[in-house]
Length: 192
Ligand SMILES: [Zn+2]
Image (cartoon, rainbow, N blue to C red; front, side, top):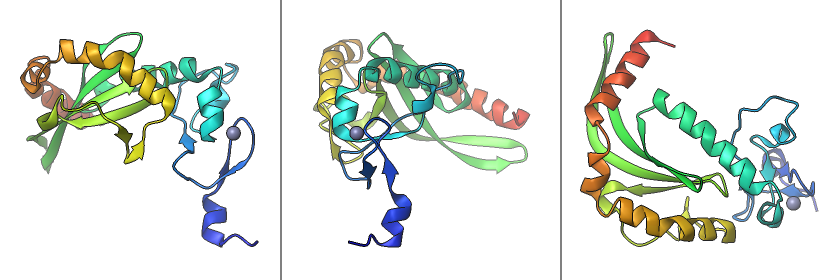
């Protein structure tokens, strides 16, 4: 059978078993890690993996945690503020802004917040609008059913998250939103 050009172009191969992947639900897009090239896991940064290989990958948890470490390092350059971090997860509050002007840089708070839960054992994140927090425990990520590894990781952190952040008010109380926006405004103005 001849594959249509578009799907051939979009196909990738699994970083473990080398089978061709076509971006079906079960395929996994690995996150980015900042590692020296000599590090044994550096070659996996941004690679694709089939679902079964990802689930049984020996380095899934250590790689996932490195992905989350990088997200944590990058957060100060964004309008996402860290509200919780431990060995199982990182939680950010994302503050939506819009630019009123670029010269000088002036940002406005859109009053739209999202709780982003990064799971270290998988290096993947779940986004929950603050207006729905905490709501039911999520069962999907990007409209896809959670993988077994994601479900397990979420199950182990969810009770902690509910006790630390019982409601939306508690989430917001952890963040100086005006400062997050002002810092980002300054960062953009410096242009680095
Ligand atoms: Zn595979």
